[in-house]
Length: 404
Image (tube, rainbow, N blue to C red; front, side, top):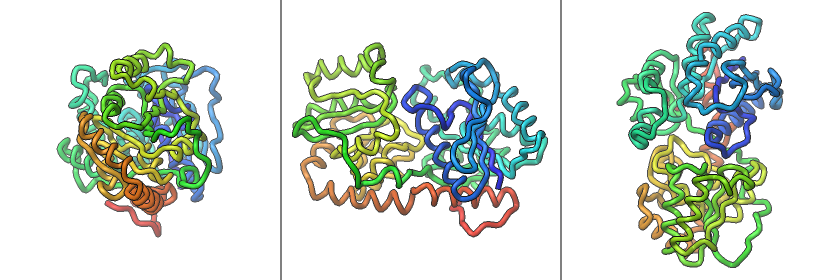
């Protein structure tokens, strides 16, 4: 098939770790590569955010990234991009009119969905929608701090009723969309995936500076990721260090306001020598950091899906995670890791302390995690399931089965 993937703010070519560069960028990059590896032709449309970017960039076999001129050619917060979606749709429709008309268009994020539905209407191209995050959940947790455009939730509701299929990534999201009024029959449950060739238990670990246990968390430096909760838990987890991967490049940590807040908190708790901020870590170095860790902590207050727990599991590392969103699907409590309530440092410290003190349980969790990542979340399997969804909405046949 010819597959158009639309990811207006999250380029698969972007460096990860920034405020608006994270799981969606990785998801789009890995999915496009897996689909290309299965013989499909994929074009990823993303907004041009620099005048130096070429219009088209090859990204592996049968995959290319197209930079769409919509709005100024500069980096903008994603919540400011809505006014440029009409121009995005017009440019993309012209590209399709010029000879590359897709069999199916897969929109990632709600603003991509608006542009995609507009462009697809003229060509009768079926549209598949993945939200990656829902405005109703963001509003519930962030309240007045939510910077989303005011009509985001209404747009998401209408998209769910208009597109040919909505890809839900976890059961929690399915329930949220049902409450929003999206018909159950329009949904297909297909989670995100993990690159099990890159993230694997065998391979060199990152160096360890001392004999203490290592807790790793991988997250953007924003409050909702719950990093402060891990730091507050750390005094009750003796003999363990915390390593935080994410945020701006290491050179920018000194001027990052939230990094300064985390360091002040560690100082107040007298554990500054046990908390290390790495800043943004190149993607090729992340497997070594996972393998060097005794446990990975993923403690967001809310999480649409969560990529880092899957990467840790694929590397054979147990996960202690908050029981929110997609983490309740990926982390099997008592099998591949432990689930704790969000924003509860005491419960978190208990889980970390008990797991770090039980070598046999950690090894059992790690072995089960590798199996689960490989058999349920490896990208080739996820790509097959999504290809089955694409074929169903495009009226084609496929040997793969999608799970509804």
